Image 1 (tube, rainbow, N blue to C red):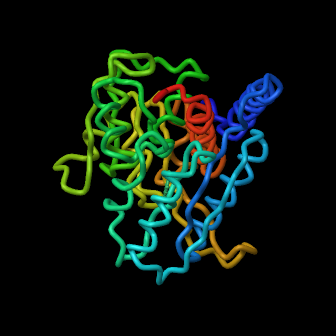
Image 2 (image 1 turned 135 degrees about the horizontal axis):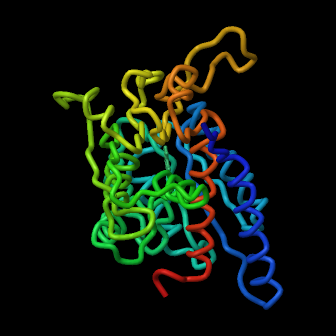
Image 3 (image 1 turned 120 degrees about the horizontal axis):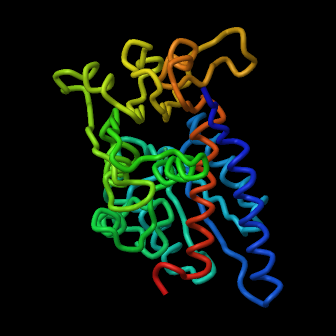
Length: 293
Ligand code: GUN
């Protein structure tokens, strides 16, 4: 069994990005600039955004954090999005999700200029991804592809099962794994809460990608001997023995499943750091105007 070290790979990629940024700036080019909008004070979102800002520093990007209180009106938030659309210095920006219930996430996503949508959530980027055109690909699926690539994990002709059908992970992941590409060319099944034989499907998977947000859902009897298991889960499970008061827990019961795998990602230190680094890669593309000149 090989443990996929997302933390180490992500550090390596950040160094590659930093070297490229240094070369751009030395040649008189513009330093890429990522802005992030954070609404409210949700613990998970605070941590994710802080980590994104930290990663920007390592990569040599300019970063701007814009905060709103949880009671911000939808119109105020949309006005903030439009200001970033119009700010020529900002190459790309994100609005950290989830948003308070009184704000339509879809309306916010569709207000972002797709040319600055480094999260890849705008319907234009999603649509372009589906038909294989250059676009911003959402960070978590892209990070997983990068891990498969860097560990030389074969995907062509393999049976891939994706657990979960969210717009930001499950759906784009399934789309990318079936794409005529490398990694890709897999035969993909998507399972969700209404799947009739979820366990049976999982047992047939050469590559199992768990992204339904249910801690420890995937047990050993759901995994074929020699399978590749990618764990996207990051649920904060209460744990009084820790200073933080919680334990970041994946969707895979790691201790039981790992011995059956050829490759597996840990939580933390697997997919999580790759998600942030994928956002950094998209920001570099935005800074270079590489996708939408
Ligand atoms: N919330 C959970 N994951 C993400 C992400 O990749 N981007 C944004 N903006 N919000 C998230």
